[in-house]
Image 1 (cartoon, helix red, strand yellow):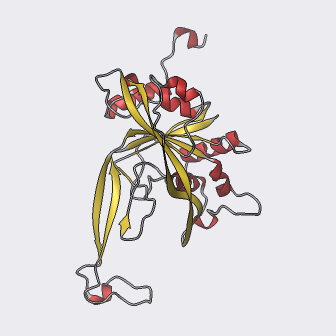
Image 2 (image 1 turned 180 degrees about the horizontal axis):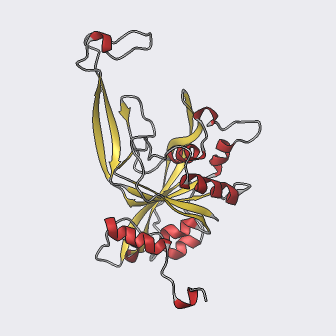
Image 3 (image 1 turned 45 degrees about the vertical axis):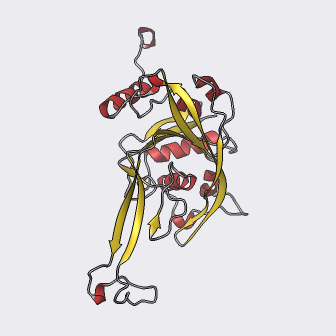
Amino acid sequence: MTGFLFQAGGPLQSWGEHSAFTDRDTVAHPTRSGLIGMIAAALGIPRSEALSPADGPPTLFGSLGHLRFTVRHDRPGTRLRDFHTVGGGLPAHRAVPTAKGGRRGAGQATIVSHRHYLSDAVFTIAVTAPHAPDAGELTDRCAAALAAPHWPPYLGRRSCPPGAVFLLGAQREDPVDELYAGVPLARPRTSGSSVQVRFTSDTPFTGTADDRRVTGPPSSREAVTLLNDDPVSLAPHDRVYRARPSYSTSRTLPADLCGGYGPDYLDALLTYLQPPTTPQDEPR
């Protein structure tokens, strides 16, 4: 099950599921629509072509529907609410425009909105395409686009750029397995020998590779909920989403996987990405 790994981490990120103009929510982890939109932007797919046709020839955007995302919650972050006002204190000729071409009148000039964010959160994401007819080619193309994106990626909103560490590895033989035993966790090590880590996915947590990597049995409480975040159309004035199941569970991972913060974590990532060579590995 080949695929690739990348990391969603930065000062702020926001993954809306049912946002309205005056109240922009965020769920607790990257959404499917947000991740597909990020990859579509990296591939250079304009919003006018971000459609999944019900019939007709397949499209590049439609092929992204084959992608499957497994999200490891390295750090859940802290919820933050940003309070916005627009149009207050302005003269009548500069008040907020209306749809009819006029201006908002006295007593209605100020628009209040709330923007919700996750602060200091980090998620490590494994991307696969198990049911795609050309799975390896599709995931390779997506990984290459994230390495050299057509449009800059952002973590749910354009005001939320990703951190310096982004694409962690392309052409991985089993990227989901690496979430359990390879990629360092972006959190400090605890005093014990193991640590509880939350995972979410758009497919059930089945298989054998990940079960072999946990230090204890997987949680018997695998939660399933519905999220309205499977994109059908991301056109500017006609965004359409389908509901899909979202699976979540907790796993017990080795505490040695914790890489710490700041420079310590970057060192741990460097060791993961470029393991030290041994004498027999060196060319003669």
